[in-house]
Image 1: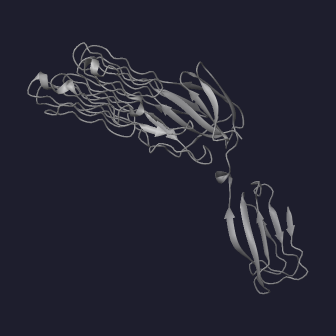
Image 2: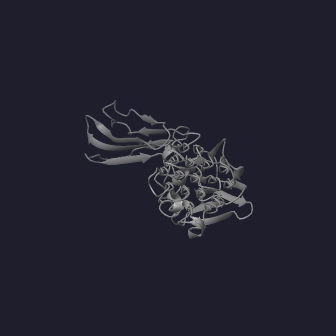
Image 3: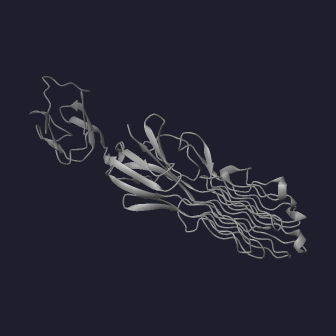
Length: 391
């Protein structure tokens, strides 16, 4: 391409600006010709310059006959800064939905297994944000620590996802899609059971995208007796020892990712006898579970989950379950903190607090068990959300 300036009479302060708005100067270079006797940046009269960098923009101002036209602004606006390509997609699987939020964006919400199919508009700029929450863990049935919330991973970046309010642990590293079908796995919550090592950890949630995966790990199980909590996306709370020794909560962010997908569970402590046992709370997406140590009368509270507006309104996910116990110190067991954040469960002393299950599709950890024969809570199932620009 040729840009030739035609000025009958040039005066100081004249301006000419050019911009590669379609990012094609690398394949269709622009030749700038000052038309005969004029100069560019003090060069020879009539000497041309070539703009051959993708996305380049230059502003020229006429100074005088000695310098000629001076380039006063020279920037590259390449594809890395371009608007994301629009995506046309569909979802499959029972209960999974596709909805419009914030006018120009859609969210594909998976509450169970399914497929995210990109029909068109993918490629190098087919970018999207996401939320991937694993299933929360569960614990043994009697005087056990609270279970950990499922691993929590989120990515948002305007203009790819729009300017919504994300959680404090959200990453800016969005993902890419090309046309095709991408399977989605939503992790189940763990199940409570009898025995010192009873209770299962939550299952992983997995988002497949172009050439890679985003995986959140299931929340770790809480434990009772002289047993440490289990590691996971967030860790489970430690058990009650029945003696002056203490137990540790399970590690969070296991396996490790950045930003961290969860926090550790709290440890448990024993009194002078088995009658004084207190346990640790399960870890959550943004905070560790509290430690329960005698002579406290409370077991540990669960760690706080994470709140995001990715679906258009604030919802909390992946809180830790409260630690259970047994009398006398177990009579006021820890609650999920603050009281249900992240769909986590409160532990309960018999009928006083019967609800101990983490909420479905919130990834909360189940509450710990209290007396023998008093069931611990099941973990809440996870969720996967994909947010992208469609118009």
